[in-house]
Image (cartoon, rainbow, N blue to C red; front, side):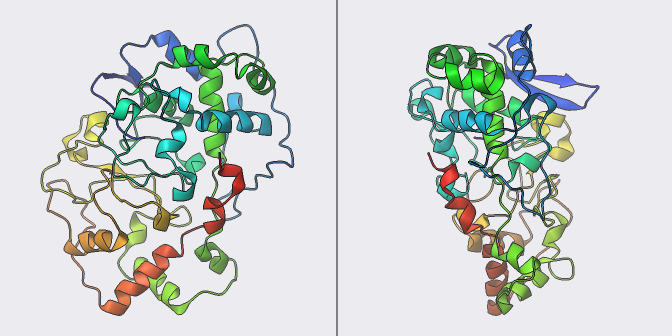
Length: 356
């Protein structure tokens, strides 16, 4: 869920250089409540994760960092999972987090833009949550600095869940009272909801693709190996933006989708014209599951994506300078696609732990 509506305000913290998006109809106190423990009760110290979840970070990616006030445990994870699939988080009771982040789609969506509450339509394609624990900033513009804060955006965005986090916590408080107390030592409130959802999302770790198995000594088809060489610095140089092992630099780029930007992208956050049409560089992990592609879902398949980059882009004034036209023969095209599909982690998308 990516769209930021025009009725969201922007608070710039110059000490951290971070933008925090909050709805102008919400109070600053609400944001502070979602940012940390705000009353005399202390947050519970996390218990050790139980064997029931058995969350093991992929060796190639390392341990993800959890905030001090939201260390991981299975109780918090279970609460977050329940909330993630609860359609009552939307005002019309029809849209859950999983509506736009479908497990079988590597927690992306099958539509270019997924309808929100009451059928409202936004502007952005729902990005995959694959390995979101390793991201340093959130939303397509990178305007939200923590996953906990990001939870506030789709929940209160009119074209997504169209709800109010205080109201929805009050409505669901009785149903989640026991889980919330066990997880955080307090009832369901904005602090608990944002922390629990972020905990579940940080558990979505993917690092067992065919490519990973090859990197760990397994066999690989010759086409994948050739495609990886073509993808890299000695070939097309795609790893400049999609660097392994996460296959993203977490940077921002204008990838030449348009000659003149329809969507301002990161310019909305920084106010710098050079950021016009620039968006966060997405991970390529599980790319075979996450069609359609680009921030607006304009490309239905990877063939269309490759064709776009082969064209060299539409010549935007601030288009990334690394974009240049190229030509692939039939074998090279097949090899490149074979490599991209080798980044699919089938075990991840089929894992019963992520199902409702």
